Length: 245
Image 1 (cartoon, one colour):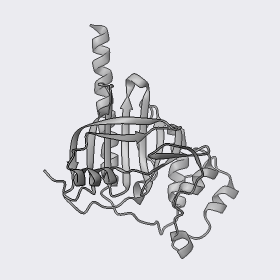
Image 2 (cartoon, helix red, strand yellow; image 1 turned 45 degrees about the vertical axis):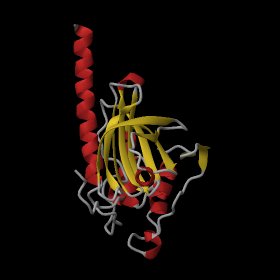
Image 3 (cartoon, rainbow, N blue to C red; image 1 turned 120 degrees about the vertical axis):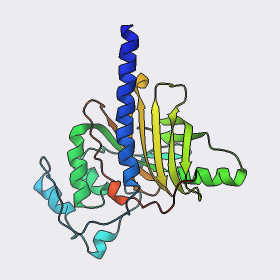
Image 4 (cartoon, rainbow, N blue to C red; image 1 turned 45 degrees about the horizontal axis):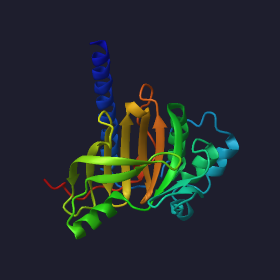
């Protein structure tokens, strides 16, 4: 009975973990994308003063600071639907290129202590785009392809969908194909997406936050130590519709 009890405890832990992280993802999709107009909060311990000074220019609130570069990193690997960027996503110099502002820069640097990896991935086929094609064809959406790290992709089997009438936003819940003990959740609004993947069988624990439409920042984490507080949540749009029932 001990193996069964241990499995049950592990499954309960995973359910609690993904539920907590999913709340963060959905909560992020309830706030309008904004640009910070205040001084950065938090600490930049471990980051050199020149790096901070470099990122702090131009001043937040200026026209230059409002310009967010799209697809800021070069691509290292490609598939039909995804492009994985090059570089160490935990390096402050790279974080400087993907963060929207000093406040988000601080959050991501501090998050380094709680995660294993970080990578920016470009999505050429978002959930919203898949839904719109399905509506035109009349076919239901039962699967989505999600990116993992380093050129790997995941087959997401959808078991529950709560979508806006327009199909441009909502949430999906399900599992990885062939992994009955896994849990996957995805929330999206137009091209912005957040998702969580928990698959103990594969040792796979991922959290993805939106950067810009079609751009997501994926982190791998240890479920025993991770607290969801990643960057990107201040840069997604407010849902303007109620999911269809």
